[in-house]
Image 1 (cartoon, helix red, strand yellow):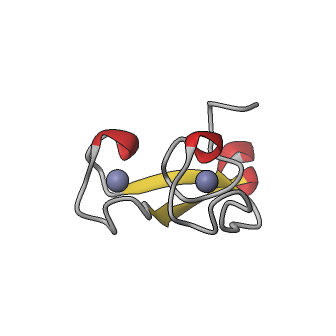
Image 2: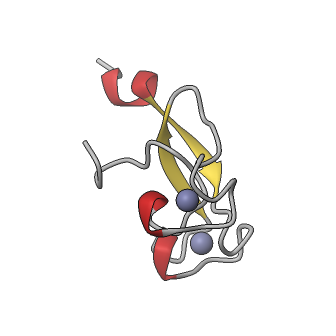
Image 3: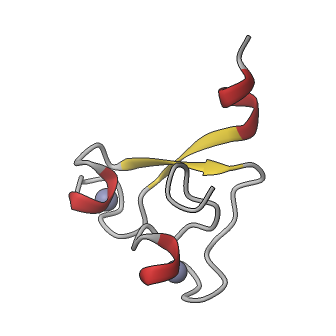
Length: 63
Ligand SMILES: [Zn+2]
Ligand SMILES: [Zn+2]
């Protein structure tokens, strides 16, 4: 089963643009719920609602 990879997709962290930061565990990537879309609160800049990743539906935080 690949249920998790069907539900989530890997995107580049908006906060560090792939360089790695504390918000993406220094991987430069974050997992977000499909379809990947920018956070409506900050439009990808990063805010408390998106865990400062810039993406909506961040995995593991707001399930
Ligand atoms: Zn990052
Ligand atoms: Zn946001």
